[in-house]
Amino acid sequence: MRKLRTQRVIAVLASVLLVGGVAACGNSDTGGGGSKDDGKITMGFSQVGAESGWRTANTTSIKESAAAAGIDLKFDDAQQKQENQIKAIRNYIQQKVDVIAFSPVVESGWDTVLKEAKDAGIPVILTDRSVDSADKSLYKTFLGSDFVKEGRLAGEWLVEQKKGATGPVNIVELQGNTGAAPANDRKKGFGEAIAVNPNLKIIASQPGDFTRAGGKQVMEQFLKANPKIDVLFAHNDDMGLGALEAITAAGKVPGKDITIITVDAVKDGMQALADGKFNFIAECSPLLGPQLMDLAKKVHAGEEVPARIETEETTFTQEQAKEALPNRKY
Ligand code: GYE
Image (cartoon, rainbow, N blue to C red):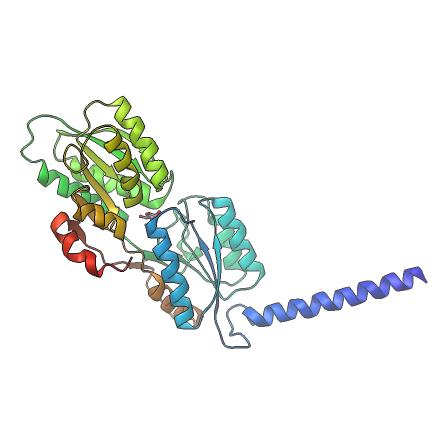
């Protein structure tokens, strides 16, 4: 009797699970890329975190563009941890979303989970940051900036500024989080550009994790350890803004005693530039949402898309920042 009841309970449970499972399938995908019941595309998006003004603007852009494009967005904030991103991607695979998009916190270590998505027939779009996987068939496209170029533009500006220097110009560098594409690439581009002038020397270079707190803390250490710092190259505005506090606290005038170059050009960074505290910014646009949603629709429809789509960007001097600031959206 008890056995029978147990069997019945199991049968009921099984059918609930089955119906639930079918409903979940119907809600996202009809067999690897088909359209859903309500016709909406479901995108699973794994965001790096909320570490900077850039990231906040990027998240807003993605959420607003998904709503505008009629895409059902599942969003996860990984708090700068790769393991959280892998977990989120596995969840999206299980939920059978139509498209997975993500901004990889670091470049390496994605092959296994990307292969799982591929085997499940779910296309992946990389946005903002890329991966170093040798197998390019693991993702459909990469939409984002040329970070090497941003570093190079920053370096070239400095070379021009310091072309008359007769003695050493001491540079400190605040890197983004270790292993991130923008940290690796901006370092590379900047280093290559300044190599033309042997007077320009990077005397210290440490990660500040793209955050204000990180920038402030590492800059304090730099200032303690190095009596003569002429230039700060920060891989983003937020670290530069954090460093401003450390520089002022050390009795130095940012933008004058220490030349400050950053990347991003978010509003707070542009304000510091217009106020004369920063000296130069290489722009990196976070407004990737509209292009990402277009790509998702194309990829879902089985259309070919370019393997690499580059964001258009510029640079800003103090004068240019004053002009651009009133119309800056983020
Ligand atoms: O420059 C920085 C953010 O990946 C381009 O990440 C992005 C970078 C951006 O934290 O502010």
